Image (tube, rainbow, N blue to C red; front, side):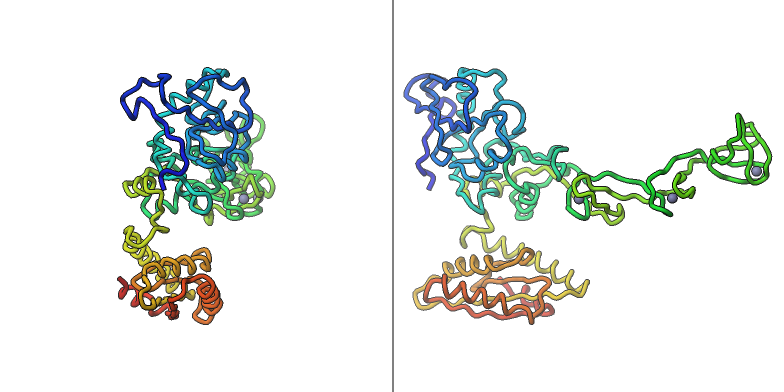
Length: 451
Ligand SMILES: [Zn+2]
Ligand SMILES: [Zn+2]
Ligand SMILES: [Zn+2]
């Protein structure tokens, strides 16, 4: 599994036998060149340039002008998206392991040899398969091989405003990291708390203060004046008359601060409707979709940095995500515990807001000589395929459980039909599946009985 056609790299750092950069027996480093080199190919036996991202390589050169989509494609389809990256300029941020300051084949070779130990570390990890698990496994591999947390940083040019440079090329890195933190592979460290647009979810919003009477934003702040003689308090412009003041209530002119009047504070007045207000209403206007969101109803998004946990390091080194692992990997215990906590929350919420929720228990029976465990993993995968966003699926002793929020007992049949179709088409012969529908009020009792 680990020997997947990869080239091996032999270097002083790992063997302790040769000096770095020595010319003897070490196999050349395979450098994938994405696009074109801005200079001639290096003529050096330590580095060999290759052009096919689908074949094995040890490092990658990405031109400084490579667009975001080119790198996203590399991340998605390249043989190994975790290799050290060499580039020009700062377009890749922390994802660049070396940035060339001068342009010449000699600098490129130098960068390659400097990065050889890192390349070797990456090659020692299991190869990251293409497909659904790649983003999570890549995040783990990058964090473990670079030995640093995945840090959030400001990205004013993007809708989310906050980015994760190390995960350049991946969609929705925050969602991914949150999921990985939820299952214990990363630990969160607080970074920032921002308001989000209620329409598109972006965080590029501007606070906009408006008149609470007419909603105009044409507001001005004024000193509040208090006329001692008659007690009138009003914004300063109301009193202004030439060099001094004249009271619009008692019609007396006055001039001396502390004798005739004082300034107890500030007020906001609306130039559109002349209203005087103490606190304007605040809305967030979205720079991306133009939508307005009431500040009191705006969602708050918390951004974190993410540090690998010991569990995360093991997952990275094994190249297996615990949620998708096999029984015996410690999968069942952890996952069932998480499932229980999640479902308990779902049930409490559903009860509080009086929404439906249903659980389905798919009991699995194995024929003579069949390994129940193997069938369970298959069944689990099939049920997961039919699950909607927000559903929770887990394996337990001899059964697979699906918790379906926002679903009434009477609405479960289509799911049962879909699972039934998949089971008859894909589950190995010799297994039989018996679904049991559990209504909301019996879900917690069922959870307690699970092992
Ligand atoms: Zn928006
Ligand atoms: Zn107004
Ligand atoms: Zn007055």
